[in-house]
Amino acid sequence: MSFRATAIQHDDKPAFYRDLAGQARGLLHGERDAIANAANMSALIWQMVPDLNWAGFYFLHTEQELVLGPFQGKPACVRIAIGRGVCGTAVARGETMLVEDVHAFPGHIACDDASRSELVVPLKHEGRILGVIDLDSPLPGRFDREDQAGIEALAEIYVAATYGAAD
Image (cartoon, rainbow, N blue to C red):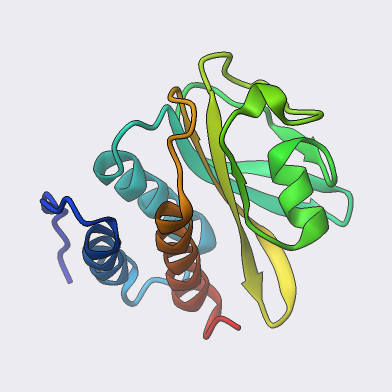
């Protein structure tokens, strides 16, 4: 099956994310490899979602640590302790973190000093956290609840394609 990303022209964020989800399903269809799917998903998000300076994955390596996975953007921190930074906090809490100003987030890890806001969505399968999708923007307040819902849907698509049905 061939895939081609197509521009999405919507002023309506929910419609934008519905179209992006459709493209993600097509892109990952029939592929089960976690790294290949993460690489393609991060590239799709990077290409389609405006105003990002980083888009990628961190995977749970041990119960205490996330390790960098495929991404788009500047080189990043390789290892993040659970409970540390926005990514580690999302895993520790088991929930999405939407941070309007990363400089106001206690313990923020500045891999790229240009980042001002961040959205981190846990990847969950059968009640277990596998890692996170992490998006950074150089704009403060870049992400809102509609972005959160859209990226959470993409996380579910990634998990379903890679590991089977999501929770």
